[in-house]
Image 1 (cartoon, rainbow, N blue to C red):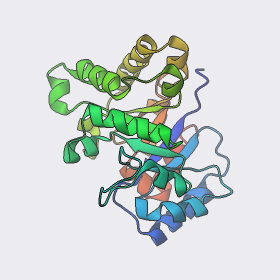
Image 2: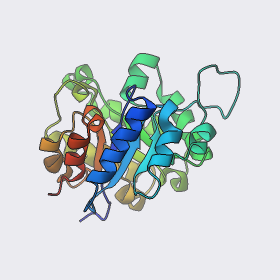
Image 3: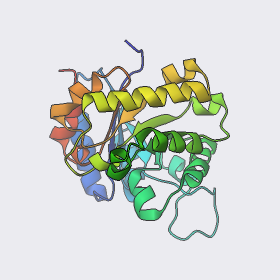
Length: 253
């Protein structure tokens, strides 16, 4: 056993009103009874973070924002800072998600600044990276992932890097119904862990949680999480319904 407790994180994206958020969290709380296998996290939209923080009180559920601005404050209409997210009661924040990179043009340099901003605000970054189908088919998976990992963590000390959670999300498997095979997932996670060891130190790499995100569902979660270097899941669509999310959380049953 690796000693790394799995983390099942639900990224709700642009879904759920405040009422729907409370209903979903209450359902998750009820379904968590007997769960000891994994830590559980939800990432509602910004508008529901404060309400979600109140709803998870007394439970073991963790709370994350879905993005942040790299500056602590300023004339950035419509943006949200790390301190604002922290102030809601959230403890984590997702950074560099493939949709942010694809639709909003986020670069490795910008992701790097956002990870730094998260740490400065006292938040734990869930640092995402992944390759497109074209990049995989061209044989560029490891080149792309290496660039993203090194770029996103450029200038960090080992102490800072130790606070970060990494999430591998193959872009070709997000919202497509496709999922990386167990061998594909393990191969990439093993590569990322090895690269973390080269950049920082082997002990840090062995302790870092690396999540898999790409069409994770109750019927494939157990096999994916059985891979020695897969330490949990970043779940999209399946986290929006109680039954499917709980089914992933209870992957060990």
